[in-house]
Image 1 (cartoon, rainbow, N blue to C red):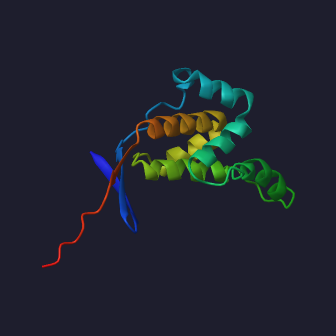
Image 2 (spheres, one colour):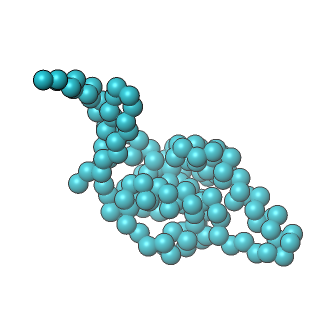
Length: 145
């Protein structure tokens, strides 16, 4: 099963084909599948989070909301349990690639295991970006009669 995204430009049509998947390509605790992601997340999780945001096409500073939001909001007496950037990127990746998981699992994953969440998203983007195929086709000229 393939999902197609079509970008139209004046003289060029590009199809980006991705195989649709119902599950994540790696498990939440599958850090040993990709040791570079695991070490990156272990030694510098904020840097990994910024890399994931950039790879997904978002601002690389977005994950800093997860670090700054709880401190800022708690100073006003508002508790924050769910990391907003981690959850939003996880849901965005899941929707982009057609991964069928319930939202409550995303919330639990983002809250309970922050480092594993970022590592799983990093592995998923690495796998998906490696498997991406781009087909470029020149439009056929219109024939007038």
